[in-house]
Amino acid sequence: MGQIKVEKNVGGIEGLCVIEPAVHGDNRGYFMETYNQRDMQDAGIDLTFVQDNQSCSSKGVLRGLHYQINHPQDKLVRVIKGAVYDVAVDLREGSATFGKSYGILLTEENKKQFLIPKNFAHGFVVLSDTAEFCYKVTDFWYPNDEGGLMWNDEDIAIDWMMPEGMTADDLLLSDKDRVNISFRQYCTERGIEK
Image (cartoon, rainbow, N blue to C red; front, side, top):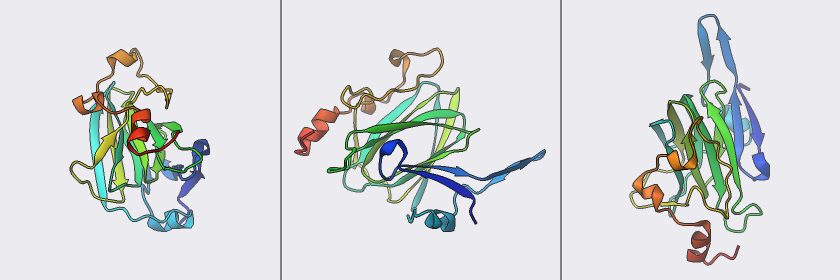
């Protein structure tokens, strides 16, 4: 018990948490609990995860900013190999921080985890040669239920960490992510005044 340290409401955004597991190491290597339901509940985080996902991406790949439309998911994300700059954008209508973003460096060395509540857009850029990214979610994946915001939207104004030796023009995006909507369009489609 007590194998995690939780920093709540990071960046002044309610619900966003950075979780640092206790790492027990010696000359053989290390051991850590990557998830412990009891410790999470003791920290006030009571979620039921139903699916684990993993991706591998090369340097300069930017995935996001993705959100679920009808089946929102809480996400607990971490990096097991390499390094990424991970970003969450608050899309909770009525939230005091609606449209605000927060980014964090997640690496295999720092072993930090990022808890992103439902109704946030999420994305990351790979800073290392490759990165393996793992995340737990509280709802299943449904086809055609994913939306996306432009990663470089001026209204959100994310200060992305760039991979060494690369510029924004060098980033690798999927065809789908190249045509994501603007934050302004997102608000207009939902009748939200920003």
